[in-house]
Length: 75
Image 1 (tube, one colour):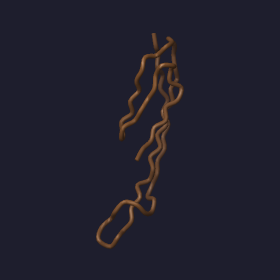
Image 2: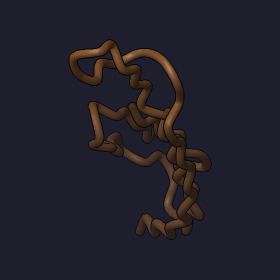
Image 3: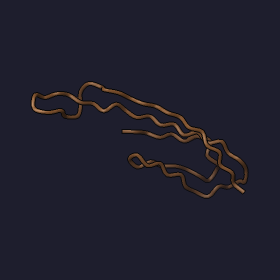
Image 4: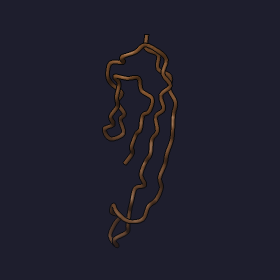
């Protein structure tokens, strides 16, 4: 499962994520140039071997984080 955090959005804008999709929405209140940071954290998928097959929950296999920077100009 992944989680997004978005910082420095202009006033009047917000974000939400559904699954792997990130949505930025709203009506900015002020013109200007904004530097927006998007941070992604992916939790490890947990698997264990129950004798017949692999199932979720158990030992962590991996995790991942990334950060991207974007410019948004409101005229």
